[in-house]
Image 1 (cartoon, chains in turn orange, yellow, blue, purple):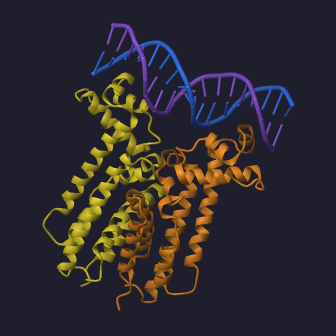
Image 2 (cartoon, protein in one colour; image 1 turned 135 degrees about the vertical axis):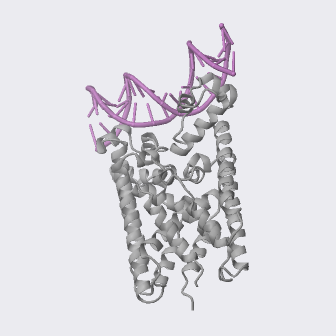
Image 3 (cartoon, rainbow over the protein chains, first blue to last red; image 1 turned 90 degrees about the vertical axis):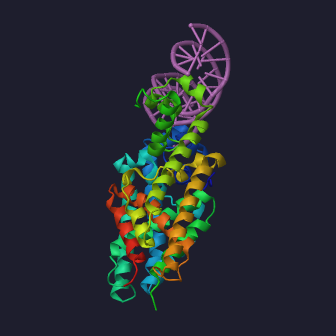
Length: 191
Length: 191
DNA sequence: GTCTATATAGTGATAGAC
DNA sequence: GTCTATCACTATATAGAC
């Protein structure tokens, strides 16, 4: 239930973001969105053409938010390892999973190029941004020159996305933390 | 459409496995199962109490199969790194994702302890089994003693599970391969 | 064991009044 | 902009005949 101070379209978008995160696209019905947003059937279809249209708006906003969150941990001054650690160790609602990554398991999102696009872009951007940081680390002698920045970046993103899977399977955030600590140990500069 | 030589329950289980992999629990309807299995409504409810019952049978079988597949790569004689590489590099239908891991993103699976149990057990077993291999590697001096086997095992499983996310987001298996190569580079014994 | 009939609720909209 | 009515279809079964 969203504040009455929010406009109707705004409440619909926020309700959709919430439900997409919780239940995915296939598991989210227009009716559920309307109820969570306290908006009538007619209103919803006045502001948005259909479920896909609303979901697209919601996904784009969520992806943009995640990008900003990541940049906040990676865009600071400092050593590459420290930036990566900061990204990996930032506070997360682990058991809820990643609101963007989880959409990749949704058949209707993957089947629809328009819905998949913002998901793809966000993850591609993150891989590229992390590759930059790894490249800096190699350049500074922090990491061995044998490492391929794009590969390590993919490993980092995968560890996070997969960490959510482990955590949700076991019902505990501990599994996520274990995976992250393992990766940090592997990345740690040998002194 | 499954062979007529398979029994009715068998066709139902196989159809359910297929659909759970493709569309998840929330996205799979009894009707879709019946059609794929070429089994009538009445037949399905004769052999299985309901959707949950059938899904449970299907999930258990898939988990068991995955366990056997993993053991085939990890249970051989050889160095720890080689076993891990063999596990990571085995052939996979990358764009389809993991038939067990994907269920962790399904709200109705996570909300139902009975459905979650086989998923949890399979992933817990895999983490434990990989931890054993890492422990062997540490014992043999293949990996630094500073590594915590349970953590590295979690990182390995997470990289695989997350690799599927990257691949499906980008629509290409290349992202999965990149993540795996990055992890193998980090694990590679420094000579 | 399999089939058809029936049932309640939900899905994803469209139409038109207010 | 919002509301109610309506719609064809699907979801998830249950009941009972064959």
